[in-house]
Image 1 (tube, rainbow, N blue to C red):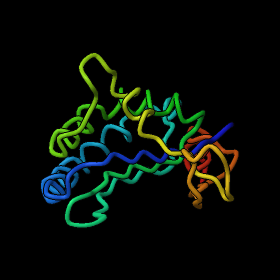
Image 2: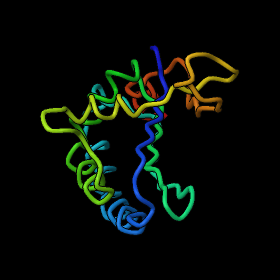
Image 3: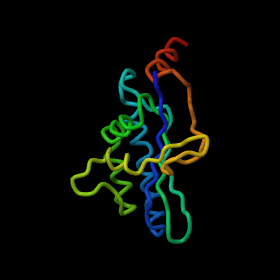
Length: 149
């Protein structure tokens, strides 16, 4: 099973950081419930984290990171379908989100940053270390093996 890493970075005004954090707190259990409610054969998220990072008094970023089965582009579409309402709820607090007529998955893809472990070009990649979870094992396989234990 191919796995991929997702890093989405959405800039917004730092003045909205508290409101965005409040919405993140409010949606946490709902997102977890929606992702956990998927049948084991449909599960695709190994790890998901969404946080606010304040750069300074003017600038902040909503950072979504995930380790997923499949490729990043497909996983962004699946996240948009699975927890899209919750993501839109948070993005509204940041006064960010898809342009009119733009799908949420496309918006997330537009704000995605590829992680690398070395210098690279184009500069849309960022040096970083991604959480690999259980390399080569899909979420359905992990769930099946857990059931056997």
